Image (tube, rainbow, N blue to C red):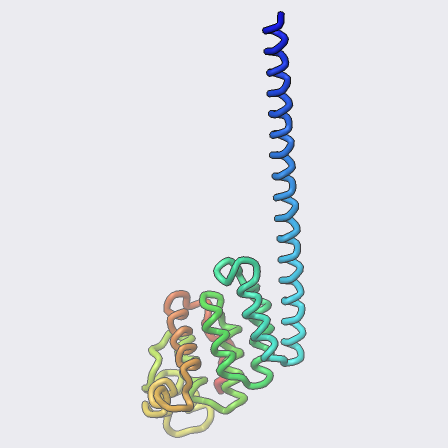
Length: 220
């Protein structure tokens, strides 16, 4: 009887220990879930605040702040590799830069968009070229969007533009923005990189950056 009583006592102590261990495990899992949920909620709230600020910057043309917000948005919640910037955020940043004719900044944003760059983004850069009178950039970007070789030469669109504006001769090879101006100070690395990126995008997915009537209007 004494041995049986001792065995029962040991079994009772073991049951208490197991029960305590199970309770602790459940508590830890609950705390981990709650902490993660609070982190996700805070991340989502912060991201929404950034998007709201970006929309305001786009409307008011605050291009410096817009660029800072896009960079912060890329790094939000786990770094740039783990975040997909919403298309609307890119549009707001492009709009803010375009309102102040920040051609190089617009070009840099188009490059950073990568596969998300589309006709609308390219049109923002075309509009910057139109506002600043940079017809060489406009022609080179158009050719890139059309999937033509980027460089000098008498492209089909150059012929059409020459006819539309009443010129007797189309732009010569030396007038090609990506050709003659590529090494000049007027053609920055950002602009050259953008034209090349759009050309690569057009080669990989032609429909994504195909010019539309708005593109045509900007170039004319």
